[in-house]
Length: 310
Ligand code: FO1
Image (cartoon, rainbow, N blue to C red; front, side, top):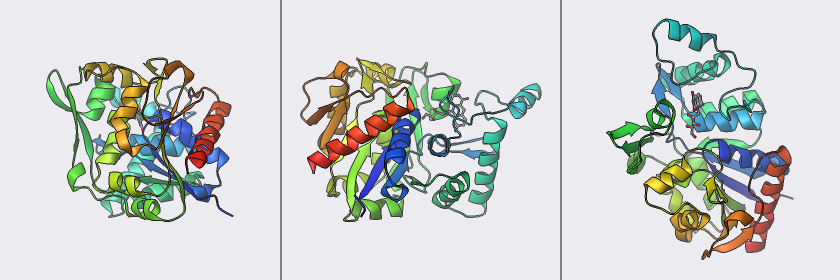
């Protein structure tokens, strides 16, 4: 008997860690991971989808533990060679990783959707839970910094998050159609929980919620919606979340993130080091995921908490 479907919204490295825990404690048919595609971009003529790929590699056990992105046992001949030719080498594409981008670009050109390609790549790499993009349409996160609007990967990788963030935009989101299987799953009667992974709310989760219909489908979904705070002890576990919150004039704590999600949440999991007065039903648990056991433990905690909220 199925306990119902868990639908997880995930961005980059932090989201993939919890998605891995969920994939290890749930049967594959009971997990659907919805990936942010706002970080996607075209580079060296290739379609790069960093958050889909991080999820795919992590769930396949092929991820690079040193970086959190890209593949393990990677070699860098392509990057070294392109640098000697005067090509762009600020965004590091490993040789093995490169094959995925080349093949995805070919298939997109041949008319396949990003969902079809992702599903097939996951199957070929041995990923059993469903991983789907938030939309098959183009959405691009843009960052307004000191020198005006720039593309997300320019901000994140090329400029190493140095620009002071004044605003964020998700180009194309207003016209994007939500991934149909995701909408159908959210509207289905057998959803156990919607889990908002401990990803950056502003750049990883907001693009998903900006796709017309997705936020409403989550709001009307009969299952509890549980988020995990990405803030531990007043700091972000990884990435620019804390810096970005400061620059946007927001206090760096879990309450700010809960307030940002607002009425969407039925429950919120926070670390004991970051408990504030929060309107949502709280569960206090260790949220730092260093080991594989931490990922499994947090996944179980989130599911138990969601089951109690039902
Ligand atoms: N992140 C970096 O900080 N530097 C890189 O050179 C880099 C290359 C890269 C290649 C493929 C891929 O799928 C991801 C890659 N990332 C890199 C990570 C990625 O840009 C960010 O972690 C996400 O967009 C944020 O979620």
